Image (cartoon, rainbow, N blue to C red; front, side):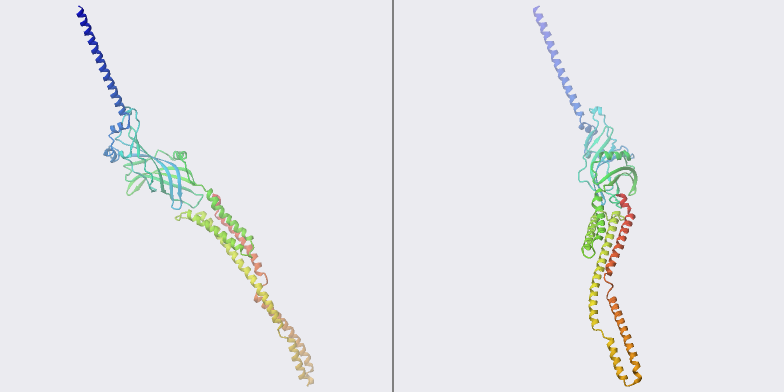
Length: 468
């Protein structure tokens, strides 16, 4: 009986031990399964899992060879948005705009789709651009490629939307209208289009209208150089390039130049030079200071014109107002210089005439001492006639008549001498100070003419004054 009891206890203990072993193995299996499940979940919670699910490979023809459409007859719509961050420079001499922009491109890939719930709620992945087809969008006005490398990554979303962002410095051509320089308003365009795809393959669209684009740019603008951003307009056009149509999105940037710098450093100094030229009429004409002063002021305006020539483009269709302004002032100052040269010549001529008059008076005085005495000549001839006629009584009465004739001839000779002296003085020169008096009249007339010319010039070219 006791043996049976121990045997029963042994059987019960062995069965419990086996149950304990089974429970331990099951727990280990559960832990292993949990670990495997966690590892499986971890493997699905990363970009590599989605890339493996989509079979993204660098040389995959499916994703890189052509447009991402199942049916090639369908077009690919590319949405384009541009954000202008800075206007770095505007070179008038070669008519180029240098700007810093961000470009946003989005399009759909019909081969891409995944359920975010199966991949830990991942809403997007980022992959290198080499793994995916990208639209060949270029800027038509761009003349130099950006030296910085483009963005190497793009984003992919579960519904197949692909987004690409890139920042670049754009050097583009811009047809400038400098007629109102430096109070001009310029409009520069950035035209985005595909290189080889026509409008049946790639359709460019923008989600921004003119108002939203302007507000977007005003909020993001950082640097504007010497320009003030006015607004931005966005238009879609279909353009015929080499026999096939292409959709083009054109961003037109309207901006106004800051003119305070040019007003203070160019326009006003040239005007001050004109005022100095007017004030030079108060300088005496007798010395050479007036001529030297006018030449100096004229050279200063010439230097300002050379500086203007380095700024303005040579391909301008019309002469800018500021060039007309400089040429007009230069012409007025040139006339003033020529008038000064004429006046100095007349003054020099008057002084030379006075010297000639002094020499003429001295020569006349010497000649007057040597002139013949007609009274003595006629008296001698009369005495000779009287001595001859004394022999005859009938000639006594004629002697008195000869005396009267001699007196008359003497008076006539004196009058002729005075007339000859007057003619000599008139032939040698005018009255003393004649040209000096003429110079005063010329100066008065020219000052009046100068003031009228300046008034007429600024009234006919009042656009500069109005713009100021």
